[in-house]
Image 1 (cartoon, rainbow, N blue to C red):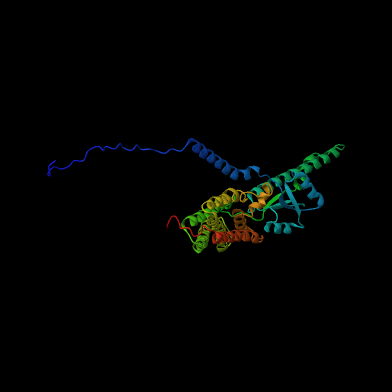
Image 2: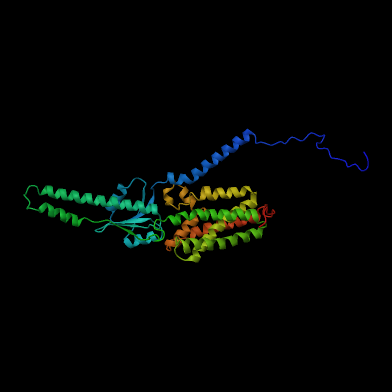
Length: 372
């Protein structure tokens, strides 16, 4: 080949082209993933449906104002185990017990029988007590009718003047007591069915989870994680309180105290998840999410009285963040006379536990995988 000749590159290489290969998941692994996914769905369904399906009217604390015979009659008429019947000296004492959240309602006997309820305590308990008032009215009507029949039977021997039975019936009807239902602690007019306060529990639980997950993934270092949790609690508490109270008017009472309660609740969940992540790594995020969403939220008793849940789960739920947060916000909004020390301490305990886990966890100083 002469010097001026340009060498040409061959169109095809002498080496055989490498065959493209694609890796496929083995059938056993695919089947295992499907089974795990189906099991996870079943667990989620059980977690959220079990409390509502198994809940029933049981051990409902109510007071009765009356003599021993009247109280015994109520106890005998109610289904076994449905009521936790307590006594109150008078109507004012029964109202005070309701306002302290010691009972859900009361029955006041006398010439003017009355059912005292508190729709703000629990819409489900409120409906149950309303139904009890209807049943009490039916019993009174039946007693009046029986007395009227007995009077007419006694008068059969004599011929009554014209119109006498009708007059007797009118007198009996006028003397029939009417059961009055009084809502001593009503819900806000902006949330008349209490759905807003009940539904608020889910975004509060989700908010704490989101904060904990993001801090775990994007923040490294002990003091930086703790600072992020504190900042998240302050900003998130103000933001959520602004929506729930300033916009939707679901919460009542002091805005700043409600914001503090919300902030402590979401900070407690965020700190706990970030602490578990610092202690055991990425698996801690999953453990914290399961405890919050699949255990704490279903047992929070935000939609029904904790007494209606199978024992002891109603009380267990009050020691977890969602249950303590819901009880605290309900007390602050509608029951200022109630003792709220326990939910404050529960939330503070979870927050402190999370901070301690962040401090002692061996994964706390791992570099953040994503920079923000």
